[in-house]
Length: 394
Image (cartoon, rainbow, N blue to C red; front, side):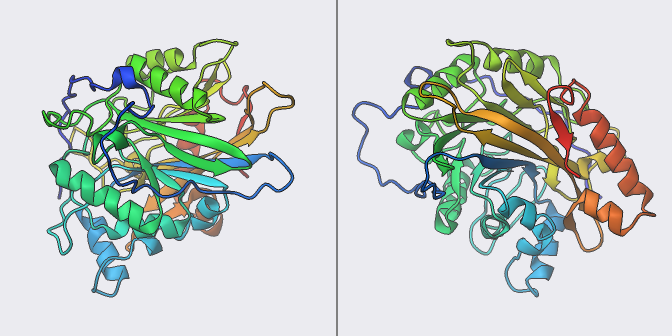
């Protein structure tokens, strides 16, 4: 049995690129552009609405890695079978964003789970095959294997065509958001974490992972928008583990990111939260949608601080937002529809990520499914998101 997670220590080292925003330095050193080309969605008749879905922490514990090996027949690792139950929802959206919490180990391993994660690079292929467009990579585990872990992770994502943001192999890459295309819109994706479990940022790589800094985030969002982004999405790894309600840092930062930065709106259209291991509320503030916590999308048996196994660590939501083009020149893209789909990592065996609504319909006698559905519905709507138009997908 794995020990419960210990309290995490945030690193308070600010990134040195705050003034740079997300623009490229004026005279960057020559560097190969290894990022995938922006994902294009054809829009022959002009801008059209598009859907964006987002999911929570992908956290391959040791038993998840073993399951992937079994699913591959004992040779290699297949993460796609675990995600197959939600792949139609993920792949059915125009854009799909994941949170890759861990870094990837060297070919052949060793691969490790908690407390210092190194996952097989085949996770990236599983995510891509499930339909993801991009993943954010800023978490408290981003520095678990230093610069080499970051490099292997981003190289693997590049190899399968997954865009990424939040960590970087070089300073120029750190200064760029992931740029995605859908419905004729350019979507900028940015990501930040509260800390790195006490591991200091390398002195020669202070840009290796983006740390939460309100002014930095707002500057990056403004730079993305002035650089041509129609929609700005910010992923933040924040909050208190195992706490259903957002903490004061989340509430304060959410208000600041949603505040009017000119023209009545924030430069940030959507905030996607991860880290707490449990689903948390959605809320609409000044036109900006905030998802305080998506929950763990893929994880093994989860234990809270008291040592007890906590099923909430395997519950999560798929957030789904429909963006509509502006009605007139000079206006903004807006969220025209918002809903969520409850998810569960069913511990089986085998481990499988399921659309919880469908799972509960197939097995109406499963009390654990019914309990999870009721809890997720209550928590997600606990801050008035229903009155702002959020619904649970039928």
